[in-house]
Image (tube, rainbow, N blue to C red):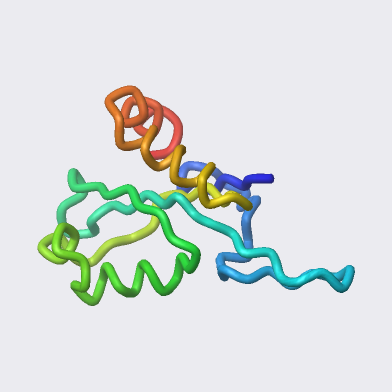
Length: 111
């Protein structure tokens, strides 16, 4: 199961951005992994692609300057994310988005 949200879309298919989703059938909570796309507010040509299990905390970390690459172009805003149940699938998608063809895909469909 995955979920996609983008700033280009009107609807928001993934409303819950917390890492833990509550299970209703007695199973433990489902841990989601997010591949996210950031854009610098002050430098809109600067973008960043990352992976996390806690989207809100990771954005806060980027905006506080904890990441060496993103600290120079603060503040950041989320322009889109994709949620995965599996970390390996999320990591594979992040790697793809950071490739040449993945950048083209993101620019066409997610930025």
